[in-house]
Picture 1 (tube, helix red, strand yellow):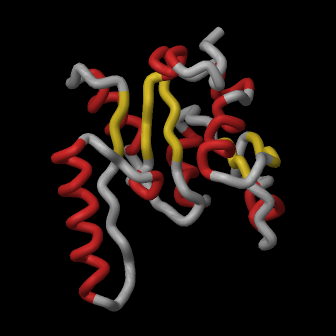
Picture 2 (picture 1 turned 30 degrees about the vertical axis):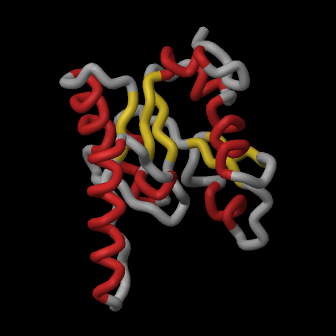
Length: 144
């Protein structure tokens, strides 16, 4: 979470939607996030809960990130540039899995290639989306 500080200094809001973790996620996140909420367990439910917070409702772009994932310091600028230079309303970051096994790099590469070829992304890839496009889904609120 401390790695998100450069983004927070540029007015990017960090919202933690905890799905009932048994570790110290909520306590550790309190001083590092703009808002920490309790959400139902499950990735989509947590994403929806985070997207309903006042900070997210006021945002033009949302980015969903696993707590154990990292973003580059300029992620906000990369996201805005990617959306501006594309006809897409969403995108994702490549995944790179750390570890000693050489298989992890192969898995990372295959995930990224599959995503580029199919347009399908996983939550592990840090997904971003324009809020205006979310109005197509009934369960997420529209921007104010």
